[in-house]
Length: 119
Ligand SMILES: [Zn+2]
Ligand SMILES: [Zn+2]
Image (cartoon, rainbow, N blue to C red; front, side, top):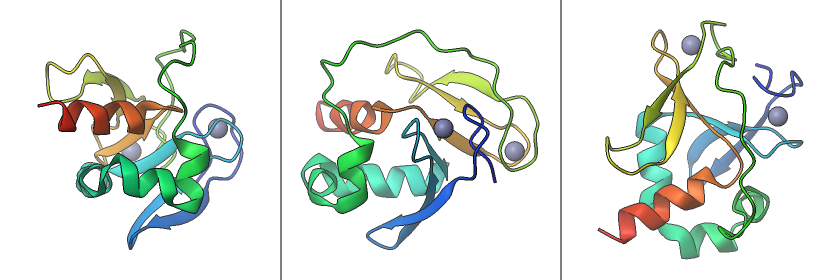
């Protein structure tokens, strides 16, 4: 599978036995909804200490740059669609309606964890 943004091969990684694919270059993550929930539930502290997550989670103060919304699914090449995580989080992720994969841009995993723990 290739990164929908950089078009280079995604790398396999696992966070506490949850398998994900991630991009070395833009730090994006590709996973299923179930995997995302599992990772998020591990919590920011655990993730901040794990090796790969160091590169995944960036300081939330980082300037957000506007990104293009129409990427293609790395799995089945359908167009990804933006959706509001948990309907009201104002964290916009991209998902594939065909295979239900989820694409997270750099920093969005951290946003979700903060959102879950702030509830
Ligand atoms: Zn990338
Ligand atoms: Zn797909």
